[in-house]
Length: 364
Image: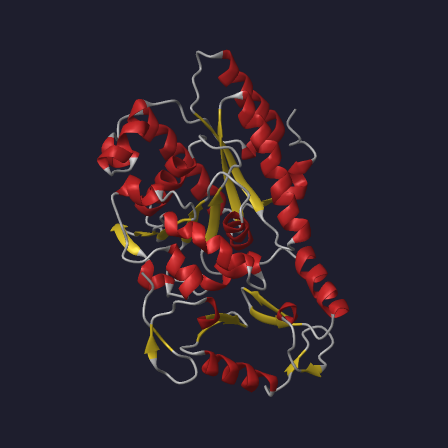
């Protein structure tokens, strides 16, 4: 059920029910109780004061959504398409300094690779090391909340579509560890995103200002949806779980191509933090071959494998992380090692660019 909002124009309280009642303007969400208020706001914007072009400094009035780009440093304005192209080129050429929390997307096109297990236990492990961690479920299946036994009154849908403050939506689940949950309503957010200008960066805009956290982990769904594109445009690095089977190697190849596309076409540098072999069984030749292939292609970006372990499957049923459910298991040992490698990479500010690994990561 939608949350009550106050009209941006007249201040009247109401519950949004129609698409026209919610509008994105320069990265801010506007609410209109009636079409009259909406038209009043549009008329006021036509007479808005000029802004300065971030490239040529020329003063101009905003007319189109593409003339505004929201970045970590604020808003960037372009008076013309040539100016926008130059600004985008400069932004793509310069790897941005890390500001605010580190943002890690756990992503793979292929399903069944242990993405949610990895996201939950890496987030929990980092929190146990004293970092302040927010885990965001970007998958409409909502498995993060199920695995941790938490159900928020509001979800990521409310943040994306209704402009709810993510700090109010986040649910504390452990010490230093908060979660923004999701459920099947998040699938409806795809329709909202598709109709928005700057549609690949809505999540980035909604989650700005979360400086209370050291790390934000995003659990992505196994697809290249608009939700995942938003997650990748928000993340500064990607952790890729890879199950030890042949089809998973194909999925890694698709992941690298997707990340390169985000870099080249969406003008957002995203980096590979690490590749995590999962469901590893040293007794099986295929598992050994997959791990060796990943080490050959990704080098030090290939983390030590996570062994197949029944305790990892049982932990979600107990609504616990592997460190709580079976701290002496192989699963806890292996994910503790993954957390150690992630923490070390974050501390060293290691960010291996997609372009630096694309040449050798074309997995056969």
